[in-house]
Length: 216
Image 1 (tube, rainbow, N blue to C red):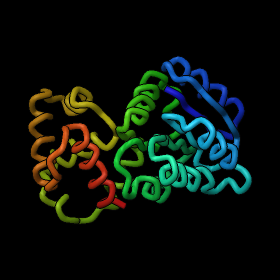
Image 2 (image 1 turned 30 degrees about the vertical axis):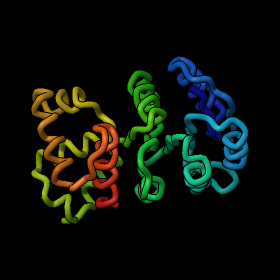
Image 3 (image 1 turned 30 degrees about the horizontal axis):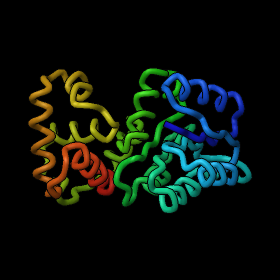
């Protein structure tokens, strides 16, 4: 799989290249600004774009705006945003109306190489990866919105962990329950959210996006 990296910090960019190569990605291009990112995606049409939220020249939301353009013009390219701090509105902008292949992580997660690589692969494969801190803040802001209010407290816990991108085994380990219990909760969530019939992975993504839409 091919990737492009947009990060203005040279040291972090070098580290990201090494990590992606460890994960089996071919890094087709690396750049330090949004203009270079869009040019690289247009040229290489990669499987994944790893994008810093704040880049030159304004260091505000250049990465987010570039990511939104990528999702519109090159829907086959998954996008994983990296941010120094939790910035909820940027996460909501990227996630709104998207169906998988999206992620938003704090840069500090890169230090846990194994977990970061897992998130990168998940996003590149069309899944989601949301930083636990982002999910926590979205949960705090979420009101009673149908059909999410149908979920039990435990089901909301499971859905929040799904939003972080955790597998059934990962959710089971976090909640200290069996995988069969997790599978039952997920089936209940999918039913209560009135999601259309589809393959299991696609319905999981739809459930996560329904949760995120309600939280934003």
